[in-house]
Every structure is written in C-alpha cells, then in structure tokens.
Length: 99
Image (cartoon, rainbow, N blue to C red; front, side):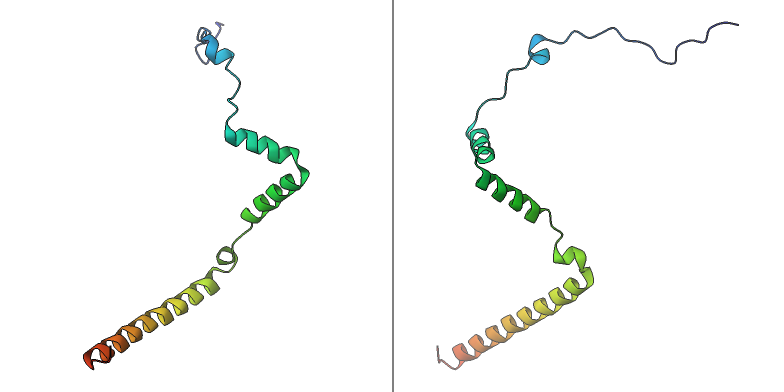
C-alpha cells in the first residue's frame, strides 16, 4: 500500500519585511491622548461607559415597529395638512391684498 499524497501543498515560509514583523508603536495623536486621559479619570470613564450603554440601547421603533409606523403616518399626514392649509391661507391673504 502506498502513502496517499498530502491533502495540501506546503508553501515555503514567507519572510516578512522588518517593518511588518516589528511595527512602530502607534503615534500619540491628540485623539489617543484624550482617550488615555478619559481612561485615567474615573468620572470621565464612567460617563464614557454610560454613553456607550445609551448608544447600544434598542430604539423604540425597533421594539415597537407597528406603533411607530402608525404614529409616523399620522404625524406626516397632520404636518402635510398644516402645510397645505397654511399655504392656502397665505394665498388667500395675498389675493385679498391683506399682506
């Protein structure tokens, strides 16, 4: 019985350039310095975590899509009606030379 061929071909090890094997440390930009400052101050760190928790919450429209769709439809209808009535009122005032 013969040995089966390998399931895959082995490739020679690729020699990466030095800058890829040992990259420079990240630059200390203004954003990183501010982030480190926020991490050092406990009150600011707590505010940051509360902000992240607030941003991660589920929206009302995600929890109740039907209710938000109906409410949006009603609000849009009312606003459109108000715009049309307001335009007709201004047109009436202009034609009667009251404005």
